[in-house]
Length: 86
Image (cartoon, rainbow, N blue to C red; front, top):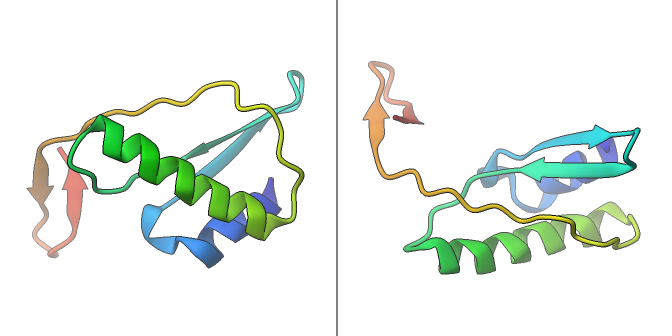
């Protein structure tokens, strides 16, 4: 799990990846965000980002169980200049 997270930070730090695991089911999950014009573009970009991180981690590719894409349209600006999804 740490190897995959480190690989995300190494290859695509801009996506803010979070990696988790369900040891009982022997699965790992990665959640990250990226800008895209629509869900199809986001899916394609996301697969590339994940593939880059997986290759950099040195982990063996496994079956992909699920891919989810969620659109976030509104962005709220904080007083400090940071942007967060609304």
